[in-house]
Length: 60
Image (cartoon, rainbow, N blue to C red; front, side):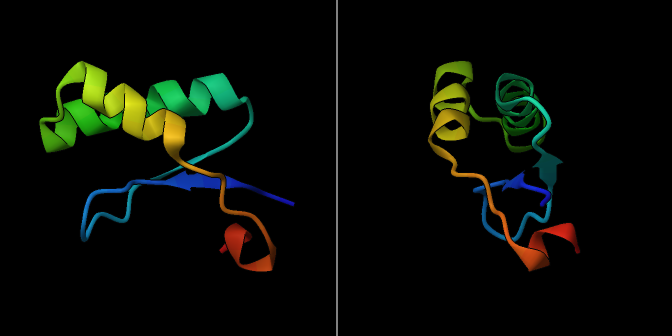
């Protein structure tokens, strides 16, 4: 089954597939800083708190 992290920002459809948890968190942190102007510490915290979305619909 595929898992992914979805951006927590409202109306953002960005997601990162989880192949390695650490890499997915770093990718999401970079996205939050670059696209949503989150401070680095806040973006890192938000990305670490995300739970992977799994299940049959995760592949879509």
